[in-house]
Image (cartoon, rainbow over all chains, first blue to last red):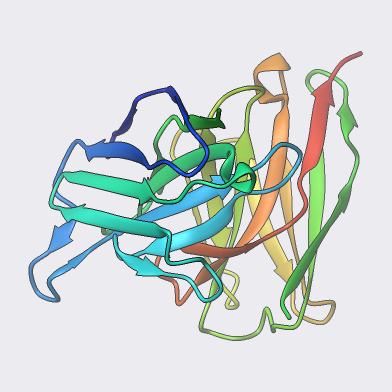
Length: 114
Length: 120
């Protein structure tokens, strides 16, 4: 199975600041034939299911603010949240969907807004 | 608007079978465009993909759970279901159903979650 490792496990960033979360995969998620990275990012708030933010490593879902941006390729990815707002406090997960299942998630990164 | 509404017992006795159902509105289970998935989350832990069912009835289950899991669908009710047999305390978790967009592995709509407790 592809192992997804996020860092840090938690971080606290000031309101209005910028947070960056890293995600590394145990094998490349770049599919050469379509030049796409098979990686998604989710946001989960307490008592709620995860919400899809970004797919294909950098494509924001409709309605997701442009303060959220995804980047990276191959085995190293990042989620950056700019101009942090109180509502961005949540746990963020990366997830790979390369090839056949199983689909695997990172362990999550808890973001606190100071 | 796609909605996934979960139902089923949140309390299961050890060694018995967990049974959950996900009713879909705003999309058809009978569409070949999606997989219909189950994912669980242990307390204060990350997310674990369990498996999915296709409109045809074919399934793919995580090998670690394959011997205990059945995922099925009822196209007439636009529902799909999870059965997990021989449960233990290790199966206590929040269980989610989710739509796998375009059979890609991207989970774009989720159910509300069901907290499953394993206790006699």
